[in-house]
Length: 242
Ligand code: 6PG
Image (cartoon, rainbow, N blue to C red):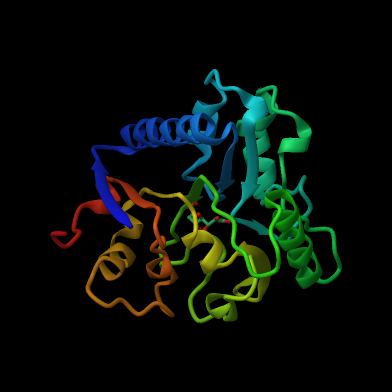
């Protein structure tokens, strides 16, 4: 596992650097396997990255789009991660509809939706029950509490290791999230983190032996892939020397 930390001068440079790296890894995957799989993160930070990706000239039919997590709301809800990515990027490019795999949020029981997405991933990657897919690009953000995807502090989702997808919990609100094992099997994990409000959690996550139940992003270290932390100056200002 290789771990790279880059602190970029401002949020614009952060997005430009993120775009460069995402394009590099997607093109590498297409060269090697004629397909590139990417799992998107939600929140606000990646939105300009998605808008920049919409301006690129990529072989869109070779991209397969997944999500690392989703709020448990309809896909047309303002809080939907799928809605944000479609509006910023996916609706602007000729990617086949069949290549876009949003997390289902239309089941009464979120656990049923999580199981459906788990099945969809296994079917797409042609896996048996015990296998874990290698997603080419796993985009992740980090909350100021140190969560990532919808793996929130002190929640059961942090311990789920027998499934690819589970139900997360944010202040009692259900989320659907990829689990730590599938994230850590990715070929390239890219954290994109911006803002002064992330400094405290980053300092904890980059300290020796962080408490993973309090700072779930510290659970993320790929088995054999690349781990990239791309930070803007506001977020990365006071990191301990690596
Ligand atoms: C979500 C995300 C979540 C997000 C962080 C950071 O569904 O909200 O996947 O993990 O990446 O909360 O969010 P910001 O980019 O808005 O700070």
